Amino acid sequence: MGLVLLYVLIDVVLQFLPPHYCVISDAESNLAVGPFGWVMNLNFLARALMSGCVVVAVALTAPASRLRRVGSVLLAIGGLCSAALVFFPADVNLPGEFGMTPRTTVGLVHVVFATSGFLVVIAAMTLLTLWIGRRRLVMGFFVVALAGLGLLTVSLIVLPQVVGLTERLCLVGILGWTFALCLELRRLGLQRLDGTKAAVRSRW
Image 1: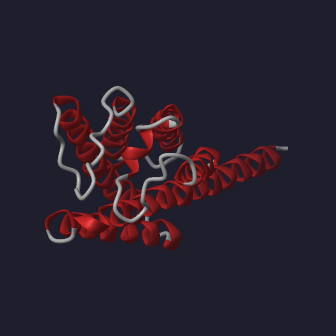
Image 2 (image 1 turned 30 degrees about the vertical axis):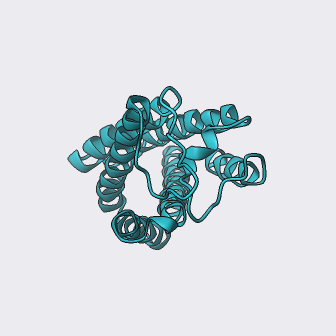
């Protein structure tokens, strides 16, 4: 959960640092291009680590099922896609350009990893949301992520001037879902621990 808060904090701080990308029109990945780009690259790695931590937490939580296994694998793949962005920086739009159209091979690879990461993580969220059950906060952020992905798709086609905003809405859903899921896993873990303690006491 701490990694989620750290990720958001770094994202916000970077918006106020040179070269001052626009939160509405510029993709989040642009933050990795510029004098403080290395900080955003660390954030990409933190997002990968975050995915790994969630996978471990999910693996330690009952019940085991196919939904849990497949969802965990997809989430791990999404984390790897995030880590790959460190090595393939985005092509920043030229003045007057909008959207996420790459101009170089490296930029194209970045778009492939970024797009794949989003789609794989959404798929993982779908499966793990079904696995964890109808938890209001988890479900709420899942819906936000889905809405963000839909609006991002539409904006790429119809209104690229707001791609940055719609992408960040999707990210809010993903990060919020991650935080909510971790809270739920923690609650389930504490319940299991209390149950174990009660069982031990009953033997005495």
